Image 1 (tube, rainbow, N blue to C red):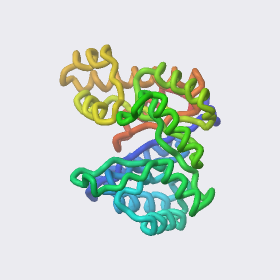
Image 2: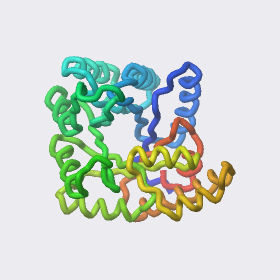
Image 3: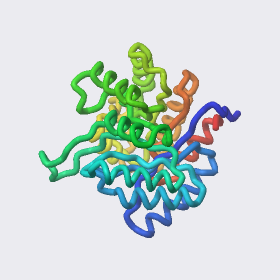
Image 4: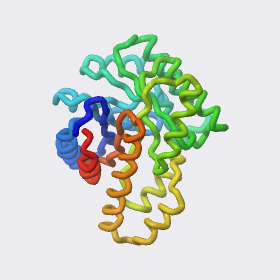
Length: 279
């Protein structure tokens, strides 16, 4: 049964080639059949994919797709950022995923970090309520955070600056999300926080991604995936069952929706969403 109160969204990264863009358009059309509230498009370290991100966003918006660009200051100044936001507004974009972003390699001390709460405040200052602002949350703690409590305070600062809701880093332990939500409530955070979901496609890639972003892969899950070796069909089948069960547990216990990191592929996200029979 469809629950219209639940929000579904999907994330892409901007392709670098014409073939990649053509493939992504097909993936978008397939996933759009599931009725997502929006798609989001990532932004490379230091804004390195700015033009590709903007191109995808403007094209998809012109095609009538609800699309939310990821955004960070990177190496841009305020005038450049205002111009980019103005171009999004003129294109009909009404949602932004506001992030600190990652430091591009080779920049060192020449790179000025602008934190997500500062970006949120900047957007609110210059554009008021023109955009719905999403920010990032980390149930298993941001890898650069000094402590769990410090990370919670920083998330609250994003909301205090004007963010509307948050999307989490992916995780495979639902208790991490539930504990995190309890702690957020203790901090006075009452805005919705949507779990980020990473389907399992490739064991080695998953480990690499997780080490880079601080997502925990439980030991039992590592061992189970290792046992399949290079049997990709078994990994995908196991992953579909595991992630479907994770999503069911989250929704059954009050999660307001789901945000899928699709890796620019329709499957296995499509199968997982259909397994849920919620959207």
